[in-house]
Length: 357
Ligand SMILES: *Cc1c(COP(=O)(O)O)cnc(C)c1O
Image (cartoon, rainbow, N blue to C red; front, side, top):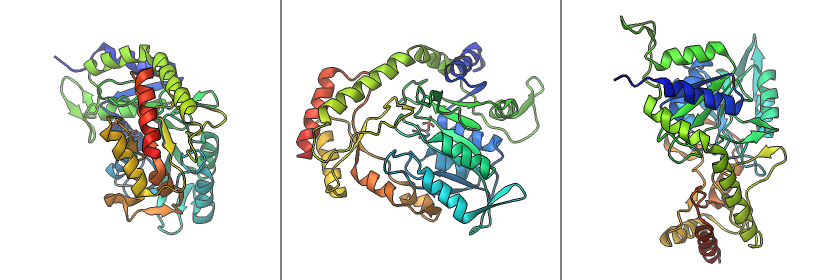
């Protein structure tokens, strides 16, 4: 039995329609979709790619799969997403467009793309990012792995740039068990991605191949699961938003606590509800809070460890990293599952308040 089949096409069609993207290509996971997105954008050995510093690490790994070099960009203290002001300053101060290529003056390498990561079920400021990308001749590959269902100025995240990626991993808002989707408005990129993820096969009977390919195609079985999940997506989004509203209500009076940003123009899904502990809390106290929550059966976790502190990426260029560490130090992600009952949520709130006090 072949692992190809009709559900893959239907799944792709549904995601394309839902997000308003002309093309959608299904892959085995979000990480492989990021790898392919970068490849079809022409990111090659020795290039540089600007990426969010406060993120799950997958997009940074994907940049290295292309033998390109990540340039780490700080998080914004208000939105917690990539800092577009610093992004602009970096490009203005340090980079120059020479014969169409954006050159990093310090490294002398070509910057090929920006990978803004939409974290926590919210959105980066895409208008500014797309504008800077146009000015500096860069592609934008959006990591919207956590952003399915999120809209920025009424347009789905993942569809602002040249390509976007959604993940259907088990922990995401909709899941195939494992899966990813690459969306783009460029027919040539979609065609090339489809070719590369099926081993770059030219003739399926004779098995001829015209370049190095990958086995990254989503299986029919996983696509069937994804289809069923897509049918429930609006319900899942509604449930996540209800969770966030309930947490906001219950936590708004906790002294010094920062609730998740609700920026204008952003329709968040609150995929992962995250708060910042008071400024007086250091790392040790935050770790104590998370430990106490977990001891009491509340599956809390810290914000991601900033990329510039991760072993494989400590020597990467990192532009004025200031805010990522603070968010990492004070951030606590609370249980946000769509299956969370009112009673569960009230329990999480009670234990959280006790832990903070
Ligand atoms: C989950 C996630 C990914 C990777 O997706 P997988 O399907 O797990 O490979 C990439 N980027 C971000 C921001 C994620 O949260």
